[in-house]
Length: 141
Length: 295
Image (tube, each protein chain N blue to C red):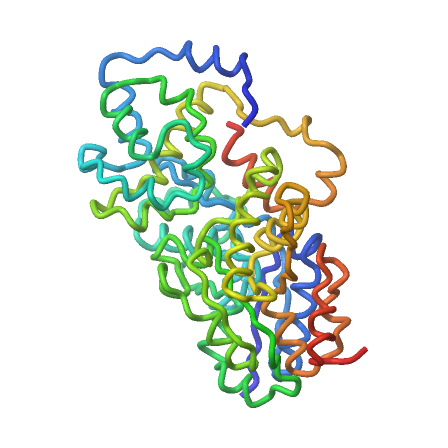
């Protein structure tokens, strides 16, 4: 994803009380983050892990430790909800839902991550429609 | 027995994956079954909502399920993996959580209430369970002899497990189909990995890298082509894979088929139903080279 300084500033401006980030993630995802024992199976199988700044297991740890800078990570936007981590987690944590919860926390503050206007015309004509609908659903609030 | 089935297309089957639809209809006709496009279909609402409180995003898929019930059917066939996944996930959610269904039904005042009778079927699932690969095998006219094909599943057909049409880690459905058509199956651990999905819009390089990784491993294992089902996987591996040729020296993208195209060719149907010209790497050349069919 391209660095967007406006978006970065807006995300950094989101303030949380102690424990609020974790509570919100738990509510949106319905998952218990304390169940994670940091084995790293999710990260080992993640197809995007090479391009991520935080690995999926680190994301969980950041949320548990109340470190809201996790919302500025590339990782949450790189996740394309392929469910590989969720299927393989030995603690049966749906990490895919945790990633979605983090995206939703940002999007629900009216901060968009993608802009339809920026997509070149040629791309708009050739790329399958499902890709656009998916992108907008994941990256626009 | 002739089966008559309702079909849910979705947006992509009417635009960039017309050949998937066309070849599927041709197969159904050849098999002697009828497939009819459902009325009043809308966007499936692709990528199922993963936030627990977000019921709004289940409206589009639910509306389509209601329209299936309205047409007096209890089954609907999908060709697109993403539509299939979305419809199945919403169907499952409203079955598991009747309260949510009540809320959704109450919200839609112009629609009938959803009774929960619809079964969503992937076309591949239908061919395996209701037609049978052995039946297809008996009808093969042009066996795909000498073609080494790697099956590629992607995500939406296999995960999450509750809506999977086969084993999530070791799926066999495409392999079994390929064997029935007489092709040689080349296995590959990357067959269940994500193709890059919607990143193809804003992050082409990542998708090209993924396409390269998947195809390159297929090449190392000696495959000369890839078969898959999802229209977005086809675009990403075929088109973005072709673009990866300039990123990786010596890399050459191999042809990518929809399974329906291969069935159509094997059953001896006119190759024009496959519209191979819509692919970035022309898949007809390999078939001609191996003598599966002539012009």
